[in-house]
Length: 162
Image (cartoon, rainbow, N blue to C red; front, side, top):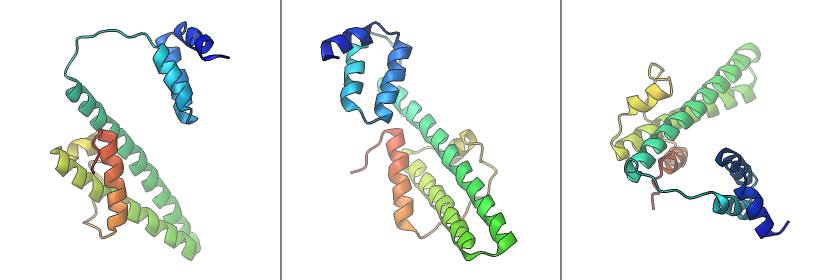
Protein backbone atom coordinates (compact mmCIF):
# COMPACT_ATOMS: atom_id res chain seq x y z
CA UNK A 1 0.00 0.00 0.00
CA UNK A 2 1.20 3.53 -0.72
CA UNK A 3 2.02 5.95 2.08
CA UNK A 4 -1.00 8.16 1.34
CA UNK A 5 -3.32 5.14 1.47
CA UNK A 6 -1.78 3.97 4.74
CA UNK A 7 -2.11 7.46 6.24
CA UNK A 8 -5.78 7.56 5.23
CA UNK A 9 -6.33 4.10 6.74
CA UNK A 10 -4.50 4.96 9.98
CA UNK A 11 -6.41 8.23 10.40
CA UNK A 12 -9.72 6.31 10.43
CA UNK A 13 -8.65 4.26 13.45
CA UNK A 14 -9.38 5.16 17.06
CA UNK A 15 -6.49 6.52 19.16
CA UNK A 16 -6.37 3.20 21.05
CA UNK A 17 -6.09 1.28 17.78
CA UNK A 18 -3.40 3.68 16.56
CA UNK A 19 -1.50 3.25 19.83
CA UNK A 20 -1.67 -0.54 19.52
CA UNK A 21 -0.28 -0.39 15.98
CA UNK A 22 2.46 2.04 17.03
CA UNK A 23 3.37 -0.26 19.92
CA UNK A 24 3.70 -3.20 17.50
CA UNK A 25 5.76 -1.09 15.09
CA UNK A 26 8.14 -0.18 17.92
CA UNK A 27 8.43 -3.84 18.95
CA UNK A 28 9.28 -4.72 15.33
CA UNK A 29 11.80 -1.87 14.97
CA UNK A 30 9.64 -0.43 12.18
CA UNK A 31 10.53 3.26 12.51
CA UNK A 32 8.88 4.16 9.21
CA UNK A 33 5.63 2.48 10.19
CA UNK A 34 5.70 4.07 13.63
CA UNK A 35 6.28 7.52 12.16
CA UNK A 36 3.43 7.03 9.69
CA UNK A 37 1.07 5.96 12.47
CA UNK A 38 2.08 8.82 14.78
CA UNK A 39 1.71 11.25 11.88
CA UNK A 40 -1.88 10.12 11.35
CA UNK A 41 -2.88 10.71 14.99
CA UNK A 42 -5.16 13.70 15.47
CA UNK A 43 -3.47 16.58 17.25
CA UNK A 44 -5.27 18.48 20.00
CA UNK A 45 -4.37 21.30 22.33
CA UNK A 46 -4.67 20.58 26.04
CA UNK A 47 -4.25 22.53 29.22
CA UNK A 48 -2.48 20.31 31.72
CA UNK A 49 0.21 20.19 34.36
CA UNK A 50 3.74 21.23 33.42
CA UNK A 51 5.39 18.79 31.00
CA UNK A 52 8.55 18.49 33.12
CA UNK A 53 6.42 17.47 36.11
CA UNK A 54 4.36 14.98 34.11
CA UNK A 55 7.32 13.40 32.33
CA UNK A 56 9.38 13.09 35.52
CA UNK A 57 6.48 11.57 37.46
CA UNK A 58 5.85 9.10 34.64
CA UNK A 59 9.58 8.34 34.50
CA UNK A 60 9.76 7.68 38.22
CA UNK A 61 6.71 5.44 38.02
CA UNK A 62 8.31 3.58 35.11
CA UNK A 63 11.55 3.23 37.11
CA UNK A 64 9.69 1.76 40.09
CA UNK A 65 7.73 -0.63 37.86
CA UNK A 66 10.81 -1.77 35.97
CA UNK A 67 12.83 -2.11 39.17
CA UNK A 68 10.06 -4.27 40.65
CA UNK A 69 9.97 -6.45 37.56
CA UNK A 70 13.69 -7.15 37.40
CA UNK A 71 14.11 -7.30 41.17
CA UNK A 72 11.47 -9.98 41.69
CA UNK A 73 12.48 -11.89 38.56
CA UNK A 74 16.09 -11.97 39.72
CA UNK A 75 15.10 -12.96 43.27
CA UNK A 76 13.01 -15.81 41.86
CA UNK A 77 15.84 -17.02 39.62
CA UNK A 78 18.25 -16.84 42.56
CA UNK A 79 15.90 -18.92 44.70
CA UNK A 80 15.48 -21.54 41.96
CA UNK A 81 19.17 -22.01 41.18
CA UNK A 82 20.06 -21.79 44.88
CA UNK A 83 17.63 -24.59 45.58
CA UNK A 84 19.04 -26.64 42.71
CA UNK A 85 22.55 -26.13 44.07
CA UNK A 86 21.46 -27.21 47.55
CA UNK A 87 19.92 -30.39 46.10
CA UNK A 88 22.61 -31.36 43.59
CA UNK A 89 25.75 -29.44 44.55
CA UNK A 90 26.38 -28.64 40.88
CA UNK A 91 29.01 -25.94 40.41
CA UNK A 92 27.10 -24.49 37.42
CA UNK A 93 24.10 -23.87 39.69
CA UNK A 94 26.36 -22.23 42.25
CA UNK A 95 27.91 -20.00 39.57
CA UNK A 96 24.45 -19.01 38.31
CA UNK A 97 23.32 -18.23 41.84
CA UNK A 98 26.32 -15.93 42.36
CA UNK A 99 25.55 -14.18 39.06
CA UNK A 100 21.97 -13.52 40.16
CA UNK A 101 23.24 -12.32 43.53
CA UNK A 102 25.70 -10.00 41.76
CA UNK A 103 22.82 -8.61 39.69
CA UNK A 104 20.69 -7.98 42.79
CA UNK A 105 23.51 -6.18 44.54
CA UNK A 106 24.34 -4.12 41.44
CA UNK A 107 20.66 -3.16 41.03
CA UNK A 108 20.53 -2.07 44.65
CA UNK A 109 23.68 0.03 44.38
CA UNK A 110 22.48 1.55 41.11
CA UNK A 111 19.07 2.38 42.57
CA UNK A 112 20.70 4.15 45.52
CA UNK A 113 22.99 6.09 43.16
CA UNK A 114 20.14 7.12 40.84
CA UNK A 115 17.89 8.15 43.71
CA UNK A 116 20.70 10.24 45.20
CA UNK A 117 21.28 11.96 41.84
CA UNK A 118 17.57 12.68 41.43
CA UNK A 119 17.02 13.60 45.09
CA UNK A 120 14.41 10.84 45.45
CA UNK A 121 13.89 8.71 48.55
CA UNK A 122 15.03 5.22 47.60
CA UNK A 123 12.44 3.79 49.97
CA UNK A 124 9.67 5.40 47.87
CA UNK A 125 10.84 3.46 44.82
CA UNK A 126 11.14 0.26 46.85
CA UNK A 127 7.63 0.75 48.27
CA UNK A 128 6.25 0.98 44.74
CA UNK A 129 8.22 -2.17 43.90
CA UNK A 130 6.84 -3.92 47.02
CA UNK A 131 10.33 -4.75 48.23
CA UNK A 132 10.88 -2.20 50.99
CA UNK A 133 11.20 -4.92 53.63
CA UNK A 134 13.60 -7.05 51.62
CA UNK A 135 17.26 -7.61 52.43
CA UNK A 136 19.44 -4.71 51.31
CA UNK A 137 23.00 -5.79 50.55
CA UNK A 138 26.04 -3.66 51.29
CA UNK A 139 27.86 -1.72 48.58
CA UNK A 140 29.41 -3.91 45.95
CA UNK A 141 32.47 -3.55 43.75
CA UNK A 142 31.22 -4.68 40.31
CA UNK A 143 31.34 -1.15 38.91
CA UNK A 144 30.57 -2.12 35.33
CA UNK A 145 27.32 -3.85 36.24
CA UNK A 146 26.32 -1.03 38.59
CA UNK A 147 26.98 1.57 35.87
CA UNK A 148 24.94 -0.48 33.39
CA UNK A 149 21.97 -0.38 35.76
CA UNK A 150 22.54 3.32 36.53
CA UNK A 151 22.38 4.11 32.82
CA UNK A 152 19.28 1.99 32.39
CA UNK A 153 17.49 3.49 35.38
CA UNK A 154 18.39 7.08 34.46
CA UNK A 155 17.13 6.46 30.93
CA UNK A 156 13.82 5.21 32.28
CA UNK A 157 13.40 8.47 34.17
CA UNK A 158 14.33 10.43 31.05
CA UNK A 159 17.76 11.62 32.17
CA UNK A 160 20.59 11.07 29.72
CA UNK A 161 23.99 11.23 31.32
CA UNK A 162 26.72 12.34 29.01
